[in-house]
Image 1 (cartoon, helix red, strand yellow):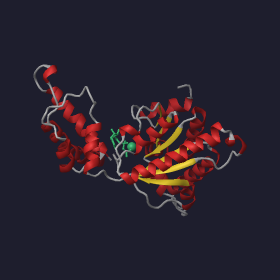
Image 2 (cartoon, rainbow, N blue to C red):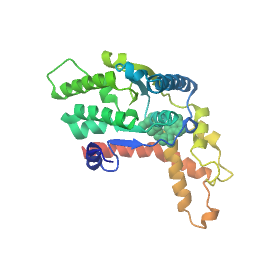
Image 3 (tube, rainbow, N blue to C red):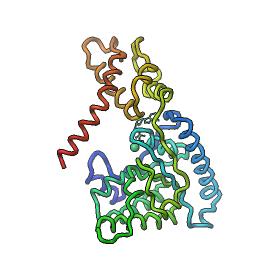
Image 4 (cartoon, rainbow, N blue to C red):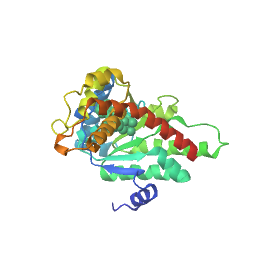
Length: 290
Ligand SMILES: Nc1ncnc2c1ncn2[C@@H]1O[C@H](COP(=O)(O)OP(=O)(O)O)[C@@H](O)[C@H]1O
Ligand SMILES: [Mg+2]
């Protein structure tokens, strides 16, 4: 981490870094998506790989240096797999992923945000990384012609900087948002594709339950029934992930020899039942702390 800016980001936000370089490990095999999302993403991947071939390996990026950035918007509810898919795209390209938690960047840095946006584009260029603006709703939705409000003025500048950077960045940029509405028109024009991440249906949920377990090491009791869990609980991939971790925790904490411990259906049931509660508790504590 030689980059001084990187160190500053690191110090200020502690464990949940505002900017992080990730060497991607997860692939599309780790992601279960509804058919329409999968198709849109496959299309995006075709764009990305030919873009890489033409502008980097074939050198056309040096000849035609502007307007090259390939920008996508991944839109969908939290926990539907947007971040993991950005990681899988970077992995497919054999690149690192530069993850920017935009919401946090804005709240920590405020007036410095436009400068930092320019800086992360520089970092991504230097590291030849795929750039992900995660939690980027504020970028996408807040641009106003009103100059009365300082905060709005600020976000206007962010969008301007972003558009300028997109003009010269020769790489892949992904914006992950929860809402797909209200895009600034100039920004919208720069987005190649909107990939809609939909809630998983029962069939996807069953596969997600399965993919969250290790194929050989996770001890599952014979009563575990993913199909029933998938049909009973409407949940996102993120919810299922959390439920599996809670279930494993509960199974591991039971008395007896480790070799005899296993995850039972009741652990998974309790795990998934706790997840919505967990969310409610979190929202509440956020509200009371503000
Ligand atoms: N479609 C999916 N298939 C498999 N696992 C998923 C899926 N969606 C989410 N997950 C699990 O939930 C975790 C959080 O998902 P994430 O990609 O961060 O969602 P988002 O960025 O949309 O909020 C992932 O690390 C993964 O373990
Ligand atoms: Mg995410």
